[in-house]
Amino acid sequence: MNRYENFRENGWKSFNDDPIFQGDAPTAKVTSYFVKRTRIDDNGGSDPPKEYDYDIVMSTEWLKERLDKTIQYTRKWNPSREYDLIVLQDYIYNQLIKGGYKKGLISKKEFAILSPNKKK
Image (cartoon, rainbow, N blue to C red; front, side):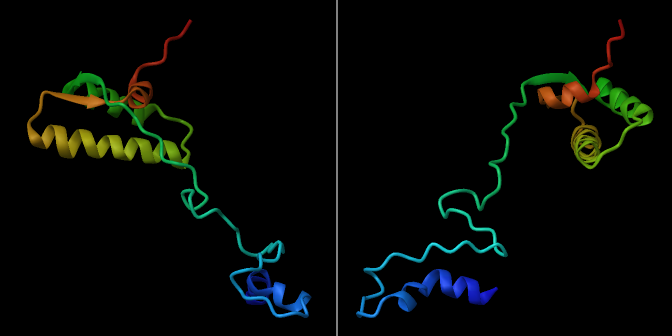
């Protein structure tokens, strides 16, 4: 792997007979299939984190009741849903209830997770 990276950075030296200073020559265009190359100015190749607006105010009792029912009746568990429910449970029990708050702020995504499904 180091051989490919070294050739990518210093490959120009093997193709030119006349001396070229390192700052004057472009880097060789060699694709390394072993190391993912990313641009320096992006976020390391990962997607930027999503920002959520916490603008829905709900009572703590309703949040606690709906969270318990949601956890009880959830049939399909995937890692992202587990994470969302664990974070929501931590927020409701450790911050709202232990803090003595009567209402809490949640996002639209969290409200969609907790709200009961409408059956037609």
